[in-house]
Amino acid sequence: MNKYVMLSVKGLIGLMPNQLKSKFKRNTKLVELYSQLLHRSGLFYGRPSKKKHLAMYKKYLSRQNAALKQAFPNVQRSTEFTVLVLGNNNVHRTVESLTKLVPLSNVKVIAPASKVNLAINGLSVYSSMSSALASIDKPTFLLLLNSGDEVSPYLLSEMGKALQTNALVYCDIDFKDANGRFLEPSFFPDWNPDLHYATGYVHTGVATHSSVLTSLISRLNGKAITAIEQLVAYFWLNEKSNSIGHVAKTLVHEDFSKPCGASERLMTVADALSYMSNAKVRVNKKLKVNHVLWPADTQPLVSLIIPTKNAWQLVKTCIDSIREKTDYQNYEIILIDNGSDEVDSLRYFESLSQYSNIRVFAYPGPFNYSAINNFGVKHAKGSIIGLINNDIEVINPEWLSYMVGHAVRDSVGCVGAKLLYANERVQHAGVVLGYGGGAGHAHKYFPRSHAGYLQRLVATSNYSAVTAACLLVKRELFDAVGGLNEQHLAVAFNDVDFCLKVAELGVKNVYCAEAELYHYESVSRGSDLTPEKAARFAAELDYLQKTWKGVIKRDPFYSENLTLKRENFAIKDLSEF
Image 1 (spheres, rainbow, N blue to C red):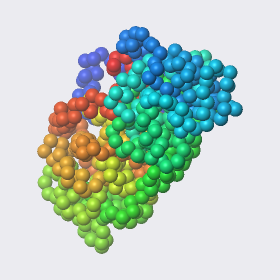
Image 2: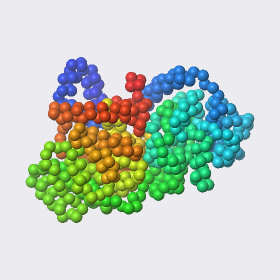
Image 3: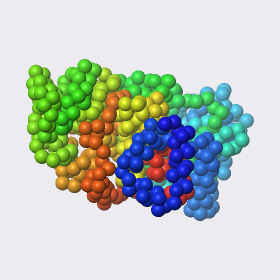
């Protein structure tokens, strides 16, 4: 059924009396059919039209600026900030927007002097960031902008407040067109290092202290910093601390007419990664992302645990695809048989004994996803644990190399993959807390070819959680949190709870966009819409909500300005604030 027919069906359902809609919702078969048709039509991922999107952003800006005006009724010039402006493109626009905020003597342009309009009286021009910094005679806060960018009058007030608790701070940004309209906001997550490595998303509107930048430059041993996103990458790769803050307000406006600098951002971040780490970076200008492969020099053994009951065809597809399509070879497969009784399945499972790296163990009793996987880990020999559903099929041969590369990093906890339905729509690309009052999958039902919001479908990045349908984690971290929660989360949300517990150890979870696999999603377990299963789901959702109330209220790897009603990264409507 196409999306236009489904739009009509949705419209008719919207006109139903509430009593009739309630009766409709109690019919589980009709609800399941309606959900499937919506899924196939692609309506779930549809974002608002451009006109509606701009109208929503206009309302958001009005609300934001009213709140800022109330918080800072008197905008005054600050002598505490020195502004470093990088480049010469429309530098006069940037200087003009700064005149009410700082003295012109506090504005320093970093560009060849011959390229800058020196007619602006009092403008200082420097050839490098180091020389501009050397000209500052006393400690000061720094604001770094790209030339052509304009700033909100409240920028310094917000940045100064955030710098009280952070060494470096960035804000949300948008574009300003030739008619002076603000459009295309980038509502960033809180600090997301892997997204920055992949896209260089923090590239303007950055504040820090002069002593921080001076210290960083000295540690680089003469390596020049040529761009803001490169500076941020160097800072994090040197510091590895939780000292980067985020102001979730659009306070910097980029010039919509200036050439897109995405490719340049990718290359400057790639340069920083190459200089500071052993990561191998491939710049993908078409997708506008860096593919970062973190080598696992010791090639650790990975234990891939696959639970199943019967469903031998699914299991065979899964295992064959792992064996035939996986470049990384140091793995074992542990199949956990949860009470299979089909002759063909039992015969196939027995045949797996011919492979030296595949073992089969019996786990009798009722289905408990958490308990089955915990049981499998007890039999695992690897230092890396992989949780794999029986309905997974490998697409990209490098999937395990990329995922292991992330899993062995000291700063990383759980690593998840990009999972696709058979119809090439996204099933999983990271988990966002707060969707539906619990948790949901980012970009669910988007087409495989879609780049996603801020490139986050094609860019490896950090999320609060990832699905255990395909998840890697160090054995030591799995043991440190006691594995999956068998008692309270037998079926749903056990992976979300597990990821959040791992993150509490001081590491970040990663969605690995390069690891692509099909996920046929619970084909062997059937519908979850029986009354008994619905009651179990409600109890597990209640446990998640009570245990992780704070993260559900505000997921740091999402934006508080984006909707929680749908999984499509649209702007919140006013009723959600």
